[in-house]
Length: 170
Length: 458
Image (cartoon, rainbow over all chains, first blue to last red; front, top):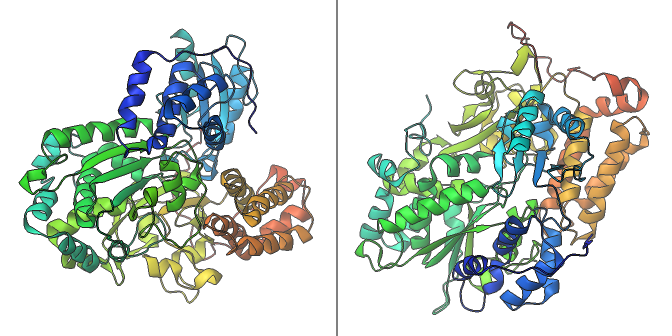
């Protein structure tokens, strides 16, 4: 369900536009819409989430209708349509990771951060959610943190605590 | 030791760089193909090799290539499917992380064979680190003259790009992947036309898995006939197996097809047995979509003969007593795992990942999840078990793409083999919340290994 929050208009820096231009070059003339998914990743990395004003600007840049951007952003799971914490801990919740304790890890994260799945901590630093298979089943439980999508493998409650502490100190 | 064709040099320091990869014989296949073979001869070698698609379907790669339409003046595309998302499968991530040039080299040779001048590697968006690794490898290859205009003076031009997905299992289905690459929602297309006729931008397109493309390198280096000597019967060559779950040594293993399943699970060369001194209860041999098997049928056919890691042997007995090779995602369940809970977990996955295009899948996966949830959490009725079978049968075969089948098979097979465990959840709703059904009769031929029991700290 696309639920778009009110936001201020956004400006794309010239450096960001230049990185869009680089991506568009990969496709034949007239097929610039192919750049949509990679561009949305860049937008989210820049602003922390994918807001409606940002999507409108992407549509204008690619010369497509805004709905073509909304329908894509709402289909794929990686685009956040609401603001999230600075660090979003995404824990794999699928079968193989659960065989080696992913559910315990999610409970532990919820306890440590004091917020439920999808919520943001009061200091704005953290959100967490369960996500489907991250293709790292042999090294479970695993979690990833965008926008670099750094991987943390073979998680234990202790290693999760250390990770959260380190991120707090950053 | 089994022969290694893909991962032979995986532990060589710096093998992720072009320099070391070249020292270990890398890019020989590009030189051989572009300088001494015609595109059709490359296709012929791949046909001779008997290579079957490593993404899950197992369709012969050379035959897929030969279907590619070649109308005059129309671009052709090769798209690598690196949208690895099948639960239990993580071999492509491993290969791209540690030996990215194997994929780049395979892409160049394969693109040459197909006459593609622009090729894409579609990587799932979550693999941003791997996307960066591949982009670096492509830049190295380009600087060394293996990509770009007039490669090695052959007159052949190729540009290779990495495309990021956005997080959607369905994009592993090849036509959904192409939609996604065109910047759209990942809704699978109705076939025909197949991508070989009308794929990316309506042009003839081949979509191949990462491992299939990497396997083209040893096929060209040694010849298709040599490759076909490895393996067993129509399961030629080696296969990357992603081993996960309750194993002593989970990880990615390259096996020669035909290895006995028992050896794969228990030998120290591979998984080293079941973790924490426990016993094997069940396996999912080829990624979450294939039928689950109890331990006894995993290791042996119904007639007692040993089961092997090959396309044919894993499928022996059909769905009654067999399973499938799939993507090679091998998940092991120990005696303390609950089959009902895992089936619910997998159904939640398919419900979450259904694109919503076909009603049987969109609605059916939700029903499966809901009914399994109430069985697992102590609110189930005996009639729910047959209801699950009924719903799964009504999804199977009634959808545009195989996600419907993939959602139906795990449920149907879990009930086929573990029906008494499902019934126990209904009869003992409170007990099933605090304890497990255990090993029961699922593994009776297997003796418990005498090992020190390790404490589980997690």
